[in-house]
Length: 113
Image 1: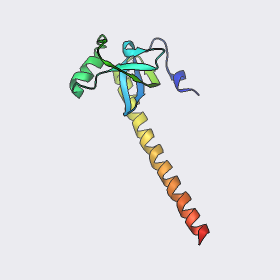
Image 2 (image 1 turned 30 degrees about the horizontal axis):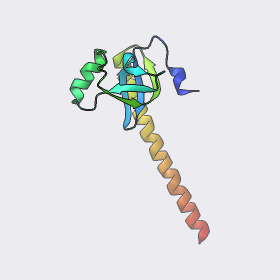
Image 3 (image 1 turned 60 degrees about the vertical axis):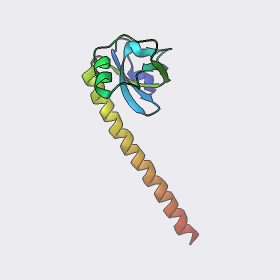
Image 4 (image 1 turned 180 degrees about the horizontal axis):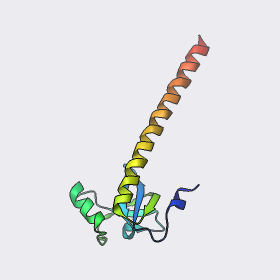
């Protein structure tokens, strides 16, 4: 299943993957077929959250970032819940990948002896 299949036209908020991690953004911040988003990196977290919750209008001076759209929903609350869940799943996957690498190295070392 494609990531974009979880996104509906009437969704108001989207969870997107920026280079630093997952974030929630309002629909109107997305541009170019949901491939980019406007993002404020120079404001504090509380200010940014208020702008997102209120679906503030985009300021064209904000920076644009390339993104991957992961999930869409109608409410901010649901978007934040999904964002937190996705972060936990990502953390678990990272741990599993690290364990796999360790097991491969250990198996290789045992065979070498």
